[in-house]
Length: 428
Image 1 (cartoon, rainbow, N blue to C red):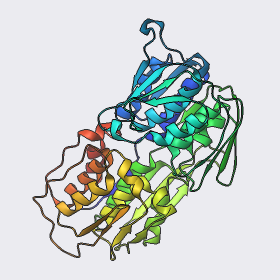
Image 2 (image 1 turned 45 degrees about the vertical axis):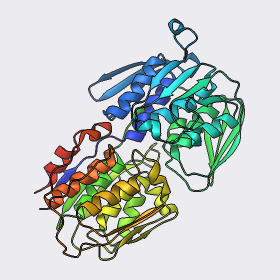
Image 3 (image 1 turned 90 degrees about the horizontal axis):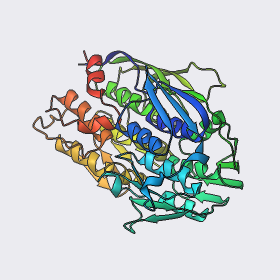
Image 4 (image 1 turned 60 degrees about the vertical axis):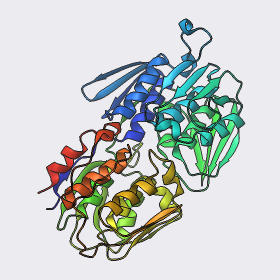
């Protein structure tokens, strides 16, 4: 078997979330072209509707009509009780909306499903409280549910110890509503979609090195935004192509934001033959382009650590899986952030690779995967998705490559409901 043909990834989930939230914060009518349709984005839409935004979905577009963030209010019929905003499994929804609502002087409660309620929220609560927000973890454990209560917020200079685009985004969405200059500093640059998109909505964000500056309060204007293909979805198919010999693949209309393409750099360092071309104008909010994949030889493998681990955090389980076929072991370190995703992705990855008979070492901050070198896999392996959509995609690839029983794929609805069908179209 091999992968052959042209693949267009699903729309980018991170940018769909951000476009929805920014459009609801803007005063007027915004249009989002090519948005992602999935459970996670539905959670954002539902929460924004509860806050008063009018959102219509039609013919591959979403129209958002809003009176702006100043109009966000709690319905009078709930009295003194907080407005409950259920976020499902979407950490992006919970964390970004917390930042958008913290300065609004209203009482809301943000909750999630059982999985999301286990993920840490302290990282966004801390900087918002330092800005004057009144936020309480109702279980007093730094996790959801959290309640945001009326407060008077102020500007802040904040230095983040954890590279997190969600923390940065929550900070910026709050800072643009507060009086004065706020500064956000990160040691390792995280995804920069928020600071790229905010100027489109009328918010000036200046940058110098790893420092971002917003001078608030800012009025947000409506905008039209085209969502590129999801780089992480493309990574899944590109990595799969390197597990099926003699694969030839063209990936079109994919987002090529430099803060999302570390996995391509890693593959090229390992010897992958990739042709990467940006096709949009340099003035575009987000670069979009194509990637051509030729799999004609084994990749070397090697160490992924430090800033590289942080920049490729969502793709690390895929790169670990690729270690089954490289010439050298794949070692991933300084990636402890993986433990706080939809599942503990270090353990989830190790569990499934061991299930098929691979030799894998597990550490608190990463793992080592040793090549199979012709060793026959355990065809009776029972793979476990751990209710994690990215682990589910990894397991589908393992099942197709080794002829294993197809794992349950319920969790794919969170981000990529048609993943199995799209992969099967490419397998010949």
